[in-house]
Length: 182
Ligand code: IMP
Ligand code: MG
Image 1 (cartoon, rainbow, N blue to C red):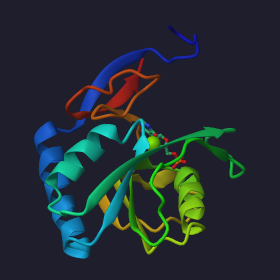
Image 2 (image 1 turned 60 degrees about the vertical axis):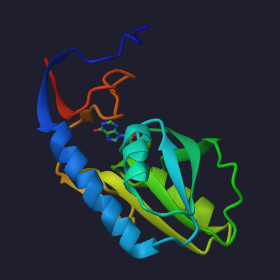
Image 3 (image 1 turned 45 degrees about the vertical axis):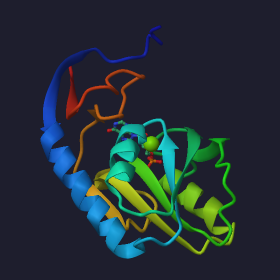
C-alpha cells in the first residue's frame, strides 16, 4: 500500500555487489572473533534492516558460546532534528547483565538510534558493549557514536538492498544500491 509520500524511483545504482559484501562480512567476522574468541557473547540484531547482515555475520563467527537476540527501534521527529526521539518497539529477551554484548546494526546515520540503544544497554550492567555496523554514513552524524566494527563507509546517498529498505521495498536484493530519484 502506498503512503502517497514516496518519491518515484528512477534508477537503482549499484554501490556494493553481493561478492563485495560477502568478502567484507567475512573480514568483519574475523575481526569480531579476534576480540571475543569463545567468550559468551550476545549478538543483538537491530530489526528490521540488519536482519540479512546479522544472519550472514553470525554464521561466519566461530564463537561456540554465541547467543542471538533482537530489538526493534522506531524514531519520531524529523530525521535531521537533534531532538529525535527513539523508542523500543521490541526489547531483547535474554538478560544482558554481565554478558558481552555486540549490537549489529545496518546503518549508523544521524546516530540517534544507536545513542539511545547504547544508553539502554549500558544501564543493564553488561560486561562489555560494542557496535558492529554494516555501513557508517557519516555525513549526517549528530551524535558521537563509538563504532567498533564497520563494514563500509559511505559519504551520502540513500541505499537499499541486503536488508535495507525504502518504504519496505528492496530488502531482498542481494547487493546494495543507491536510490536515484526521478
Ligand atoms: P539514525 O542513525 O538514528 O539516523 O538512524 C539510522 C537508521 O535509519 C538505520 O538503522 C536505518 O534503518 C535507517 N537508515 C538510515 N539511512 C538509510 C539508508 O540509506 N537506507 C536505508 N535505511 C537507512
Ligand atoms: Mg536500522
